[in-house]
Amino acid sequence: MVESFEQRFATYCGVGHCVGVSSGTDALRFALMAAGVARGDTVITVSNTFIATAEAICQAGAAPAFVDVDARTLTLDPEQLRHFLESACTRDPYTGRRVTRQSWSPVSAIVPVHLFGQMANMDEILAIAAEHDLFVIEDACQAHGAAYFSDRRQQWCMAGAMGDAAAFSFYPGKNLGGCGEAGAITTNNARVADRCRMLRNHGQSRKYVHDVEGYNGRLDAIQAGILDVKLPHLSTWNERRRNVAARYDAAFADHPLIVGPHTAGRSAPVFHLYVVRVPQRESVQMRLADAGIETGIHYPIPLHRTAAYAHAGFPAGDLAVTEEAAAQILSLPIFPTLSQDDQAHVIERVLEAVGTAPLEFA
Image (cartoon, rainbow, N blue to C red; front, side, top):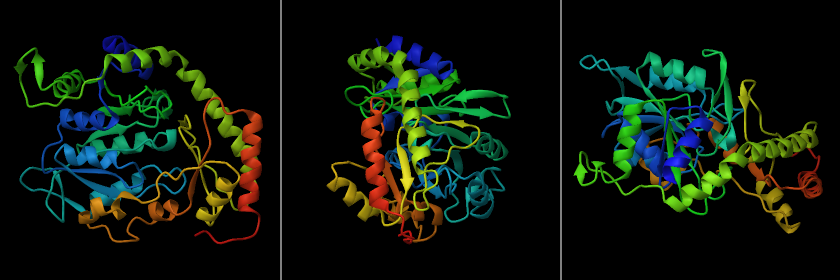
């Protein structure tokens, strides 16, 4: 069952290899380790993501360095990435590698997060990575089936098919979810795939032959079987999500206080979440809750402001776009079976909760 799902998901993503593992966190950790991230390295990523992104970096032995995001898509801003590499880093005269000025830690990889179901600007990120000889590991845990038109390749590329490797989560709430924890690594690099297979299975190259110290991170057969059954429906479910998103877009397009998600011109998102930015977010959320409409906040506290990563040394205001967005974002109901009548009710209540008065964002 595991091999069947791996083969079919690899084909779906347009890659040569898929390695099923026990969670999205393990997927990202194993992918980083297999690509070559080593203890003491620095890995660049964003702060407006679930903590698993940074956890996986740390569990691979590296340290996360957070850079700011694009104000429209809230994905990794290539200009901020370049600025970090040129201003906060220098070249080690002995190794030739890019190292951070603060700790002289080698920078080895970039983890762009395909947030809310939309891919980051991969052409520019990959070009910058190539300039500095860095691995790119896609965090595609929210982007099953998302696509990006690459000018460099002159074709549409699926999430999970552009970096050195990618990590997917199949947590039940994802666009493609199991009935428990599950994940996968996708890659076109056979060496990376083989290394991930060993890491997930106690470092075994074959039974009782342990080439490296590994982990217990295998994908359960029952989860693989469920995912194998659901995979043929994923494209249809994603299209239904796009239809729901389009109705939200139309309803909020001319509203002076509701900022809907921006879809980049080269992007075909799958709307794992539909996230708007509104003024006085807590008040709006409370009014919607009173109307029986559940919303979410993804994510209320940027990672660089959490106690877990206070040691990283990012002062308040250092990632201005990330921090501003965190105070405004609100995730509205979206799922493939959301009816037009129910969505119309949500839209009506959102418009009532936000109102039209020129309130300041806060």
